[in-house]
Amino acid sequence: MCGIVGYVGNALSTKPLDVALGGLRRLQYRGYDSAGIALVGPTGLTVVKRAGKIDRLEAALFENPAPPAYAGLGHTRWATHGRPTDANAHPHVGGKGRVAIVHNGILENHLVLREELAASGVAFGSQTDTEVAAHLLAAAYEETGDLTAAMLRVVARLEGAFTLLAVADDAPSTVVGARRSSPLVVGLGAGENFLGSDVAAFIEHTHDALELGEDQVVTITPETVSVLGFDGRPAIARPFTVDWDANAAVKGGFSTFMNKEIHDQPDAVAKTLLGRVDAAGRLHLDELRIDERLLRRVDKIVVVACGTAAYAGLVAKYAIEHWCRIPVEVELAHEFRYRDPVVGEKTLVVAITQSGETMDTIQAVRHARDQGAKVVAVVNTMGSTIPRESDAALYTHAGPEVAVASTKAFIAQIAATYLLGLYLAQLRGTLFADEVRAVLTELRAIPAKIERVLESEERIRELAISMADVGSILYLGRHVGYPVALEGALKLKELAYIHAEGFAAGELKHGPIALIEPGRVVFVVVPSPRGRDQLHAKVLSNIAEIKARGARAVVIAEEGDDDVASLAAEVIFVPPTPTLLAPLVAVVPLQIFACELATAKGLDVDQPRNLAKSVTVE
Ligand code: M6R
Image (cartoon, rainbow, N blue to C red):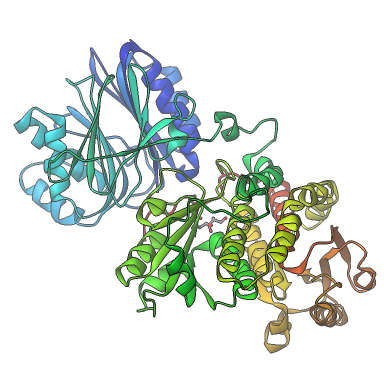
């Protein structure tokens, strides 16, 4: 996981350091157990690194300011090999400090290479896999005198997934990068150029970017960007423009990114719907560059995703099956990849991902395409790997999600997959045009409904504070409320470190009811009493069963649902919403609850322990 940033400019200044530190702050969501920088100027190479968050690195730089430089690297780490210590932090140096390297990924053959290097007299200063690449690079640079040529030699020796950035003490105008199965994008400036794990690394400085392909080496100088394949031949990188506003990646007056992103949700839905419907109310998904004849022939949809994104897929299953009459399977990407799934040319695989870099999902996409399936990526991050490797990409326009736990991306993923479902229904004629229009009208009403849920924030905060000492919470939901319950439980685990489990409400009597005891807190997502009233009646029975055993039911219910009030210990009302769209409002109180409970416990809601936002290892 780890975040990396690189910079080179034509002026000797503190800018390389400023870009590195600013980029690391924005990339901290990728890992935050240690951080470091390398700078190259007239006095050679300066490397400073510290275990802990970026503040510790900044404090070290405040005590001993770094000299001005032309080029710089930055790294924020999520430890894989070696504990988070100063020595294991990146950058790692090779060749008696002549070259410095930062790395994201895992070098699978590092043990073999370590033995080989040790036998030739190299002394190691860390337990990381990365350090072998630093020593290999130093040796290759000694022989070639050219950082790009040296990097090409190094990547030929490495197995696994990696993004590497490197600088050398006598080449202050050059930064070289390489990528295999790990992200790297280029930012284009005037008299300066940038590299980053994603565009957040340099969004403050430029919106013009290049997407690198798999197995490419890039060399940036202040005036040039050149790209080679690992075979040394010139290669093409695709230009794109970043449509995120730099301000979207700052807290903007909120105490935490999590808080801000929960409040961004009306906007995330509105932007995801924007520009996709014509004046006649017909959906146009121009990005879906898959032959319409193929889409008409699709006989199965398989959603592959992980974590929160997989729960968005589970929500979408209910809607897409209902609208399109196509069977939809939802599978965790890591399970899909390794179990010989039945997919073929008539299968449409939908890969849902905020980051576009989740390695499990990347592998699932590759496997699906190998089997002849078409893949649509539902993705939030431009320039990332999964849309590039898919047949088509449907972007969610949630803006940068900085808090490690996902909120607005989840809501935008549901909105985007609903657009995909409606589009397929329109194309295949399983819904009439006026039915599609009616759902789109309801979808457009969702942002205002989420705003209304946000008005309950203070009440939910009080509820969360009153439960700060609870040891375990259960979440129940039925139909589309089931994935909402799963997501509510995941948010609580991630943010508040409280044991939580989500169940299908109908499953309660098949086992989990044994957990119901006096004082137990159970969140219940209640379906609308209008429309599918059978669902409502059944969930009400579940609440009665919970109450009868002395547990406390905290209920998310539709305004005007008077029946729940007598059964529940607490009711959080949400605006009336058609059943299939209800997850878009019902999940919001659960997100706020988890965030507020974690805050009440004094925890870091933006960077929960052990997690990384972008899980780029399998
Ligand atoms: O970037 P992706 O959407 O592919 O990430 C998938 C999961 O790793 C992610 O949703 C994870 O579960 C989050 N921690 C949820 O808050």
